Image (cartoon, rainbow, N blue to C red; front, top):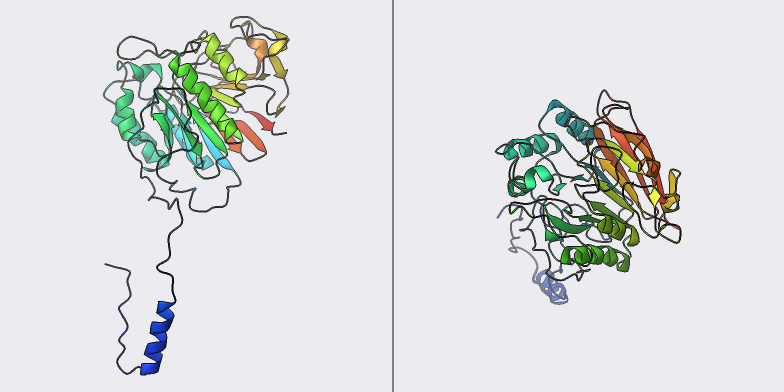
Length: 381
C-alpha cells in the first residue's frame, strides 16, 4: 500500500524508552473514528432513487455525503448556480456554456430540450462535459423534445449526464429534489415535469390532489420544516408567458407553487427570457388565472423583494437554440418585470443565482455578443 511509512526498528533503543512507549500506547482509547458524513470522491453518485409512492417528504435525505460541500461542518456562506433550458448543439449553445463556465457556478439546472435530435444525446453530453468538466453537476430535468423519444431520449441523457448531487430524492431526470449543500443546506432544488408527454403518449398527472401534486407540495413543505432558507423549483414548461405558449404547466399546479411560497420557479420551453414580478395570492387574488391579468396578484413589483410575499417566475429558454418573439400586448404582460426575445433585446444566456442565508440574488447574464441584462433579489425577513 502506498503512502505508509516503514515501521521503526527498535534495535539499540533503551528498554526503558521502549516500555514507556508501550505504556503510552496502552493509554490510547483506540484508533480515531472518522466523523459521520465522510465525503465520497468527486463525481461519485449512486443510482437514481425511485419517486415515492406517497406524498410524504423524506426530510432527512439519504445517500452519500457531498463530494465538495460536506467536507466541513461549517455552513457555506453562499450557493452559486445557473439555470437555462432549450440548448441544442449549435454555436449558440457552446457560447452559453462558455458563459456558464466563466461564471464558475457550483452547479447548473438544465431545464430540458437538449440535443433536439435522436441519436445525438452522447454528442450533447460530450459538449457539456467538454465545456464544464466531466464531474460538474449539470442537473437535468426532461423537456418535451426528449421525453417521448422523438428528438432524443431522457434516459440516454441521464446516463451520460448522471446526477452529481448527494441525497437526491425521486426519479432523476423526471421528478426529483435535492438539498444543497447536503449538510446545512441553503437551497432545496425541486425539479418536476408538468405538461410533458412521455413515450406512452400520456402527460404526467400533476392535477390537483394527484400523487405528483402531493409529492411536490410535500417537497416544498419539507424544506420549510427543515428551515432551509430557499426553495427553487425547476421545470420545462411555464404557465405565464408573453411568448409562444399558453399555460402548459397547468393553472392549478402553478397556483400550488404560489400557495406553497416557492421563492423562485425557473422554466424553459419558450425560447426567450421572461421574469415576472413577485406574484402572490390573497384577498385581491383568489387564484392566478392564465390569459388574464389581475393587479391583486402582484405582491411586489420592484427589484428588491421580500421572501414570503410571493413567487418569482423566470423563463430562461435562452440556452442556445433559436429565439421566439415576445409581445407586450399579451394579456399577461403586466405580470412581467422584464423580457427579451427574437424581436426585442434578443439574447442567449443564462440566469445566474447566488443564495446566502439572508438573500437570493439573480441576474441574467448574456452570452458573448449580446447586451440584454436583468437582475432582482429577494431578501429574508
